[in-house]
Each structure stands twice: as structure tokens, then as C-alpha cells.
Image (cartoon, one colour):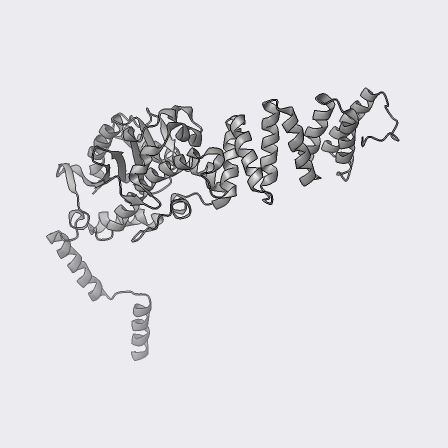
Length: 424
């Protein structure tokens, strides 16, 4: 019996389990604390009930001065941002009139990421600028019946803003809020204004370099934000459920801190992207991957003069990067579409000299010399060089070059005479 008792004691100690008497003692202590209210939300997170005590929600309001630092920037730096930069980063011309003074910065903490009508946002933050600085309202549900009053408060905030800013908010936060508003029969105005979703902007510039474009990683690698006292986001839903069960709010301050930092980072990330885009020819970006992402963004939006300006600067600065070939391809396509044919030929020759087996360069040069410069011998030589790159003449790309070569020979009036020298 003594041996079994020792094993049981060791098991309880190693697994941090409690005996029945220990559990009863802890339960009584928690019950007493709940009765006296020492663990309630207002004792742990400074705030106040908005509305009636039995028909309201818990509001934590924090005012920040414009000089408040968040990583490498201050909140007030957002007033230097230009609407054209926001529209470019979002690939959305509706944001060309973006004004941070009338924007609403939104983030939610929910009971899960599955979405659907059963998913509830128990903590919703809205940040906006006032005459005194930046105000953050964190709306917290103490229980499910706080939701309606919270949503009515949020509806008033959304009706006063001209733009919504979030992170993955187009796919998650706003659709979720819209569902909750509909469930509570409250009109939702959040989707009636332009929407700046920073996750898409961040991916456009940083995905090639960082891969992980979560807000936390963007904070660390781009904004220089270092959190202290944070809690992992995947633990937050369970922490709220624990609060509902025990009414013990002592574990919630890190949740409010996590949520607050998310929204402050939305402000400075907006300012940072505009600051980077304000420098000409991609000079605001430090890393070559980010600079190439800017060239690609201009190309996708058919801003070919900007592609040429940023692309020329890129290949001038970087002579060794493996990304150089991609930049040259976009440059050549931009030259062709702007009908700058001399520069097109020059950069196609450069591309072929750096990448002798590049099929794009072979194809574009052959096409250029056949149809534009009318240098048919040169076009034929390029086709023969391309055909030699393939292991089999039956490969579709090889057949395409062979057909072009046959057409060029026909134009020269020398069809079938393979002994001709087409290297001229």
C-alpha cells in the first residue's frame, strides 16, 4: 500500500493534478473571489459598462497622442500618407481619396476561425482619429447577451467613417460582423464604404521575401514592433470561454494588449507603405525582393512608364540577383507596349547574353527581327539557336520555333536550303 501511495503522489505531482480536497479548496476560493468581485473584468481591465448594467457591454477606451511610438514610426506619421499610394498598394482606385482622419481601423477577436452564423466576435476594436489624437474603443462581451448593445454602438461608429482599414478583414472580420449584424436585425454600414485590407497590400510587397505575411511577422520584420506581455492568438478563444465559465478575468489583460497592438500596427503599416512608395523608383524599399515586387505591382496595373522607371533602376543597382531575369522580362514587355523598340532590342539582347537558354528572350527577339527590324537572317539564327535547346523536335515549343524558321526561310526565298548561314 505504501508503494501504491508513493506512485499516486508522484503521479499527482508530475501531472500537476489535484486531490479531491485540494480541488474543493480551490473551488471554494474561486467562488468566494467571484462573490466579492475581485476577479471581475472591471478589476482587471480598466473600463466601464456602456449602457445599462443589464443591457450593455464593457467598453475599454484608450486615447493615444499622435507621438505615440509603434515600432519605427509614430501614429501621427499616417497623416503624411498619400491617397495615390494607398490606391496603388491596394490595387483599388476607389482608395485614391483615402484620408486617415475619416478612416476606421478595425480588428476582431472571435471564438474561432471557422466563420458561419455560430461564430461570435467577443472583442471588437475600432480605432479612429480625434482632435486630440488616436482613440481606440475595445468593445468586450461579458456574455452573449451583450452582443446587441455592442453592435448598436459599432453601427454608430461605422456610419461616421469614410473608409474601413483592417488585416484580412475583407475575408474574415467584415463578413463576420455583417453576419452578426444580420442575426441581430441591425443595419450594417461597414461594407458601404471603401475598404483597405492591408493583408493584400503586405503580400504584394513582402511575400517573396518573408513568405509569412501574418501581421505579427510583418510587425517584427518590417515595422520593428516588439511586443511584451502578449498572448498567442490561438489561445485567445479558450481564454474567453474560461472567463465565461469562471468569471475570472485575470488572464484577459494580455488579450486586450494583443488586440490593442494589432490595431495600432494597422495605423503605422498604412503610414509605412505610403512612405516607401513616396520615394521615386522604389527607393523607399530596402530589399531587392521588395523592389521587384513594386515593379511587378506596376506591371499588373499596366503602369508601364513606372515599370520602366523602377525596372531600369533595379537592374542598374543589382547585377547579380537571381531576380534580375524576372525584372528584365517585365521591362521588355513594358518597352514593347510603350513602343520603345530600340530599348526593347537592347534589353532583349542583354537578357539573352545573361541567360543564353532563355526561351522568352529567343521568342521576343526572333519576333522583333522578323516583324520590326526586318533583319530576317538574324531572326532565323535566333530560331535555330532556340531549336538547339530542345532535346526533341516534337516538343510544342520546338515546333513553334521550327514553324517560324520555315516562314522566315520562305520570306528569304531560300526555302529548304539548309546550307545557308543564318548567323549574319
